Image (cartoon, rainbow, N blue to C red; front, side):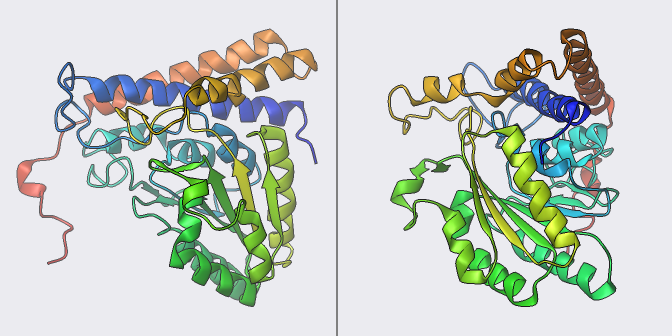
Length: 328
């Protein structure tokens, strides 16, 4: 099931919006932190995990989802949030720690929640899998035609929550899809040094569900596999697991020197960047005219600029509000 021309252009727009967003966030993040890097300084203090390079995983999957479908994501969540339709202005305000943010500025960039589109993310590795299975069980029990999707990194597939949740998903045959974004590294540890199996899709067999592996971060292959898995889940066919070979073009966190990467690896994955490759393929295959692609890119740029401006103009929370919404 290959996406048609309009779907490919829509996916590309989501991807380019995400990339431009990450570039803008990175620029804002470094303000006040250089030349002597101090992550406490600047308008966005703390760590920052960017998703540049992993955009196809989100765009290809979320193209099949509605606002009623549930998505849980990881600490590296911006591309997934954008693809799911999270309010970008309020999301950016949240990242800047402003009162107009999704959670009033309390969650930051790793803990994003937008109930209007049933989206959440968490900074805890593997934390979102069980809630997604729970959401899928809720849909099943209420007879609703919705699905729940959990995005995780390949490192989370070694967490107990992964195995416990997939076991129940397979046992109950809930409408659930687990997406593993395999960018080869859990922080700085190569997958080969942490995982007993070369690919996590083989683990699906242990939980009585299909396991699919997608190579080369290909948006069209992701779209096709996700479409089949999501359609199967909607029709009562049960859960699926999809592992996607993707590429993290930045470090684990912004400012990461990436000394753990072998020589030449960064250059190699940059050449395989899916964004320019998809642009080139759409033009070559007459899927979209250059003018349409440039219009999508311009629209993305304007959307990102509005979100950044909204966040910068939003008020900061009053100090006395620090303990509000805290359970003691």
